[in-house]
Length: 337
Image 1 (cartoon, one colour):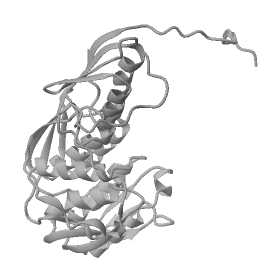
Image 2 (cartoon, rainbow, N blue to C red; image 1 turned 180 degrees about the vertical axis):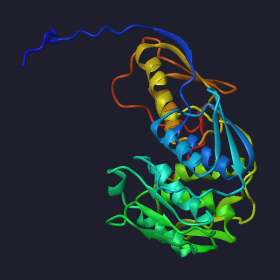
Image 3 (tube, rainbow, N blue to C red; image 1 turned 90 degrees about the horizontal axis):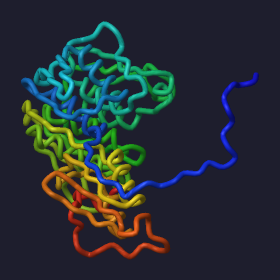
Image 4 (cartoon, rainbow, N blue to C red; image 1 turned 60 degrees about the vertical axis):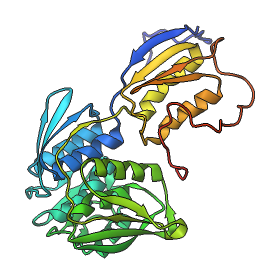
């Protein structure tokens, strides 16, 4: 069938423009938004969340929390979450998590605290994503969970009744989300929770450190213990989350685009709202841009990338990393992947 549209030219010229001069605030971090939504729901009292990301994953999480009896009010720039101290209503239908892995995994652990059975489900793609590593760890901590899907995938039925706690070995070689899911529910266990790892291996450790950081901001006590292959995670039971006002920091992956624009076109671009202590691993790109010849400036929570004098990335191999800590460093883990 013919089209009235003109075909693209054989050659399309793209003319760079610059230097740039601008200041932006990028959307909030998806990883932090879904963590904070769950912790606010588990806390006792109303939390105010500022800068949350509106995305498929966070919409699914808010809908699921509402089905569990958690009040979530959308005021545009901020959300109000009425936490119920670890208590949930029992929905009369399975929770549809769509294709949101964080929602399905985080709620599977959190719903061990429900007063009765709840089914966590998702779309066709979610029903192909194994969740057995998480289920095995929760069972080792005393939770009752049954697979209703095939190949150890959702839907899963969480029996509820509370999380006894104790020690468990978790397989963290495929996803750190399983680890984060257990950690976030652990303050509501009946006894302290200690997690060690199959073969001493856990992937994407920066996301676990991010989870620990958010948990502490809501009042939990959780930490790494031991070293090497004996390293493990410990969470104190009974030290529950406290409602808080929480500003969700910008998404590091999204911030990389305006940062790189300054490196490519020259000029200066500022991203606001970036804490100096951010644990998002993707902020490591600032160190890479510095090695490319850009200048990195920090003023409070504003980070500015100033492109090279001539504009454009350098040619040839990059110089080795500086031994000094870069000005906007976000304190990443040395074991990140």
